[in-house]
Image 1 (spheres, rainbow, N blue to C red):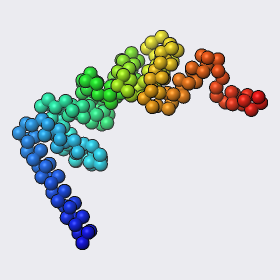
Image 2 (tube, rainbow, N blue to C red; image 1 turned 180 degrees about the vertical axis):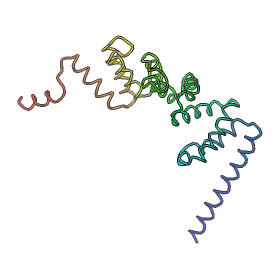
Image 3 (tube, rainbow, N blue to C red; image 1 turned 60 degrees about the horizontal axis):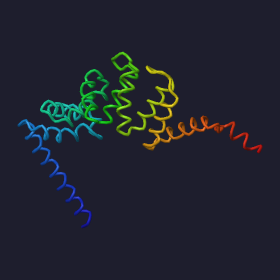
Image 4 (tube, helix red, strand yellow; image 1 turned 60 degrees about the vertical axis):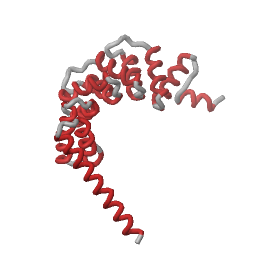
Amino acid sequence: MFKNSIILMLLSFTTLLLADSDVLKEKCNNDDATACYEFALPLTTGENAKAQDIMEEGSSYMRKACIFGEERACDEMGFIYYNDKSYIAAMPHLEKSCARSVKKACELMGVIYRDGHDVQADDVKSREFFEKACELQSGDACYYVAIIYRGGFGVSKDRNKEKIFYQKSCDTGLKAGCDRFTELDNEDKGIETGIWATVKSWFK
């Protein structure tokens, strides 16, 4: 009895979802940008994103929503193009999203210029996007900026700035940033760390 009730509830829920989906699709066909976005989102994320035909349908509606001015859809189009390795198509969307403080977009723009994905690698632009992402509390981006100042990639080597960005990455909860900041800070204070410090402690 209980099992039958659960099945009926699930069927009812599925029917409601399908009905909502049909309503959204109809509104989208009447040029409702938000409806296009809401219809497309479940088709382009999660398990559905792994099915090419579903993903393609979702992408077409997401693209339509973006054209109609739904900024969240434009954000998603940037991510979709990036995941497809269509970097040139992704960049205009990602750059606009980053300007609107979408952290992931800033991160991806930094990666594109760092690794030279379909563009000439540019350490300066990469750093600018990573710094923006760092401001938005991306621990990985802060860590990358620290590495840039460590290696002098497009900037003068700067140990103080390197430490600052390791600290910022640590503040977001990134353990690697905490470890690296502590290591540099101890070196500056004349405190030995690492394996040799451990070995020496055995003989004290």
